[in-house]
Picture 1 (cartoon, one colour):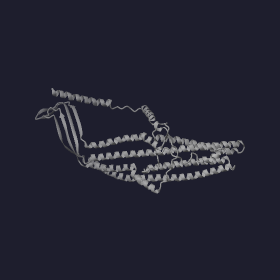
Picture 2: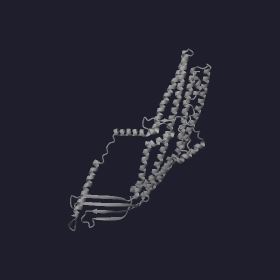
Picture 3: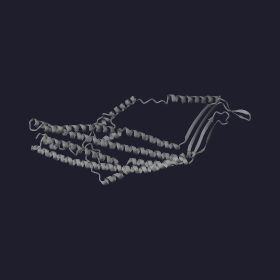
Picture 4: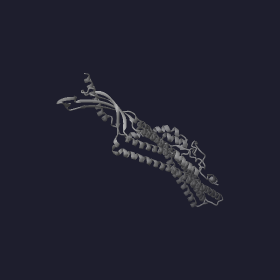
Length: 496
């Protein structure tokens, strides 16, 4: 009776298992398609929530440091990379499982279409019934794998460290991009202010020119020249306003702000850092070779490649594992239908047709490649620093030339105004001098902006211990007025 109950119990278990194997693929394996409409709704919900969270943080004028903080806290790219680090942690844990026991559970339920019997001494003996059931549980405990698990663990740890270093470089790159975008946007705002002042001055000159023409003191040609100057100022203003829109969008995108969200920044030109000396550049090169994250990541890759050589070498040696388990069968002819067993197992792939030798050779060549790649990356970093430093020097030369030319334009405008006061110069000459100064003023601001951007790029290429920029200040005094030469035009603007 008990045997019959056991048989019914195992038969029911087999039926349930078979039903599960049939139903799961039919009901649990199908995944709904990702619908674009649903994703659009999810995206809009995300944007709306971001606006609520970021609105208090973007009220008022933002400094560079505040923009960096918003960008680092809000960057989806950084969030994705941080989530990927969790996979690196799991890969380290996965590598450790090679040293833990592994167990396999198996159950079979089979039926024959004829008797399970054999003939012995002219007699047919039934070994078992047509219905057979077997249950097995086997565990394997690694005893000697020649360091395979250890090497896999070390490789996983090094790869995790690489991911951390690459994340650090991503953070640095984002900070650099935010700073350069901030400087470009601030420069465009300054240039707009200068051009607006120049346009107002030109319009005032045009008003005076028209009055003089109406009084018969000048000819129409003089007024037309002033009109052309005013039209050029209007065109330059329209162009720089387009630049403001572009730089605003670029900065907002780097800060991962929702589309259409406006921010206000400090646009005063900060104190410009001095030109780096040859000793500074040499120190920057040495510093970059020490602290650049991608070089440290490459050092880890060389370590990984060395471990991979040893990892492939373990395939040349046989594994030694401890085994144990339990078996059960419904064979009625067996004296002991269930039993435990234990022992050791030695296994070896016998070079797997030569593939183990090939993989070992590939690993050795990869190690040599990574050694050469380290030199290549180091050379690239040094050249990166040198090129950034050269760009700073070039921008410094351009800036100095622009400053000299602006001084000359100021002197020319002052001379023209003096002649105008004496009646020796007309409005057209004054307008041309004003236009020349306006153009040069804008060119100088662009040169100063480019110099500042080049310095930021150099600092993030070298990562010096002490920054040349004070990012904690919310604003700084401008090194030049909104419209250079405005003080010279004061008498002229008053109609004298």
